[in-house]
Length: 383
Image (cartoon, rainbow, N blue to C red; front, side, top):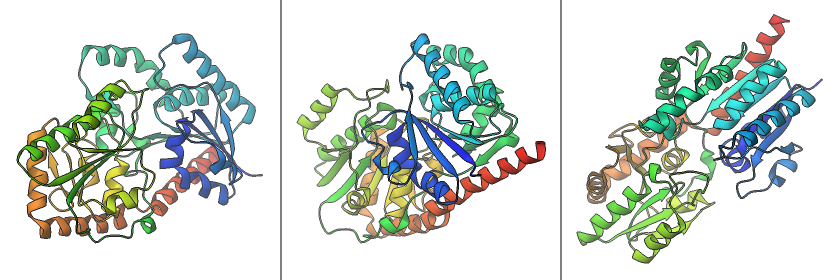
């Protein structure tokens, strides 16, 4: 009989953009895979249905703090787990990790994979609100991270340290997988185009992702009279409290300092038109896919000396680090890469080698499938 896997995720678009190869490969390897999600996030489930993967939508909403709605979400997950009775649940994104982790213990699911793709601003911003919520949520995290047969995947060691030090996670459960991987075959156009020097930001338009620092750095360099094109690719995220508002985005468009592109599906093409990739984030990143893709595209990177971001590059070899919230230093580093084309191209080539070594999606998928198998073997031994 096929082993059943449930993959639970807050938003289907994240699964498709960051974990699709894991889902489809597990199906090809003989697992009976079902995907449970809360919101579509601008996509549909056809890409999974065509692979023979069932999708189930449950009332799981990002950004909601309504206690009754959250209890209903938890109940719905428990009920679905109990009906399907999977051998493994793979939990992705925060609410799925917490509610799915609790549900897995209640239903006595044999194996749990908890995948942390960054802890967000909740753990990296020190303020009274986050302090209060950390105290309130401690028992929920503790329950979710203490299944007897569980692997917790982190993308950087800072996230591991935070959770272990907080007392909710046994470090023996932790497995490091650096990022979600990249399809290297998609990135082919390595030669820089002979056009205006171009800097690209490709991520959600969140303050914590450094979008306003990117715009500020563009203004600084434009005031210096430099001929540089700045591309801003990404969409607003109304479920995130640090998202730009529609009015703020319209004001950026009116200023005409950066070229606002909106969400871009074709990242290889976007990066082929760019000379460097910039992500001045101070969000609680895992390892940003935008930076992994930049390495695959043979592009030098400017990013922040912040967990997740600094883990995506080899400092001064594949890219440059800047302090968080430092648009003037960011502008200076962009200018340095503009003025030093040999060093810039060398960083890009080193980035490609890094991508080939650390980030091939096939390598990431294989590690996940090995985790599934190891957990299943442990569950057999217990029985």
